[in-house]
Structures are given as C-alpha cells and as structure tokens.
Length: 184
Image (tube, rainbow, N blue to C red; front, side):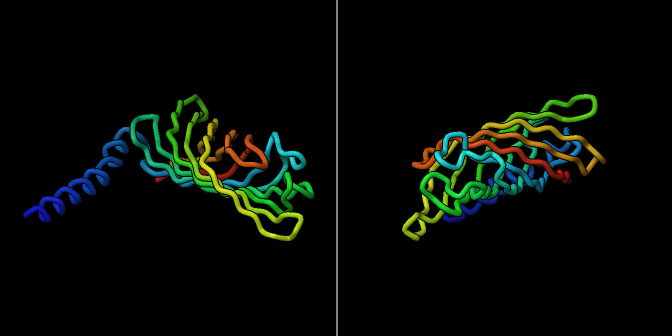
C-alpha cells in the first residue's frame, strides 16, 4: 500500500511540473527558450593572464515560470589561453554550469533582463612541470541581458556577466556573449 502512495505522489509531482510551464506559457508568448552564444571574457585578477579577450561559447536553456520571469540553465566554456599563462597554468580553460532566476522587462523595441545564479565551475590547465591540473568550485553569477526580437520565435541576444569563483588562480571573471535566441 505504501509503495502505491509513493508512486501516486511521484506521478502527481511529474504531472504538476509538466503543467507548470503550460500555465506560465498562457501569459507569455513562449514557454521555452534556447540561446546559442559566442563570446569573450577572462579574469580581472589573474596574475599573469588577466586578458578579457579570451574566446568561448555558451548555451542557455530557459523555462518561463511567471510572467516576466524565467529559470535559465547556462552552460559554457571559456578558453583562458590568450596569454601564455593563466596564473601558474598554461593552456587553461574554464567550464561552467549555472542556474538562476532571470527577471525580464519589456521595452518598446527590445527585452532587457537581469539574472542571479549559482553555478559549478571547473578550471583546467597544465602546470609548468607538464602535469595536468583541475580545480572545481561553486560560484555566483550575476548578469544583464538584452534581446532584440526578429520574429515571435527568434531574436538576437546579448549578455554581460560577472562571476565570483573561489579558485586559487583567480576569483573574479567577466564575460560578454552574443548570439541567437529561439523561443517555443
């Protein structure tokens, strides 16, 4: 009998999660968003390696939760190899996954947003001895977005973000991305 109650509870939870976007979507023009972005960035406090012109990419997956509010999962990778060294690492890169709330404001010709998120970050590189080194940490992300709609389902998106991560090599990172937003 208890097993059936747990199964029923799980089914109700899944049904509720599936219906939540439909309720939110009734108030917005879309329910889901996929963004594909390329960008630049780096660390403000790496010594050496504080170049902000390193290249990377980011993919955002968003779901509308309330009018003008969405939860967005951001994942990406930033190469930190513009300078010969990033701190004590050579050929370094930063991989990350963040999740956070984004609050949107509709303007006359564009949509602007601000977000705050929590993320997992991984710094990889090669030490001077030739040994590979990897460091992982939690971090905070804050950013602003701006989207210029092209059609109801397509837009051009720009995003600027700051990240605090407690790494040995550096703690403060900044990134700027631009790309396309697909709404459905």
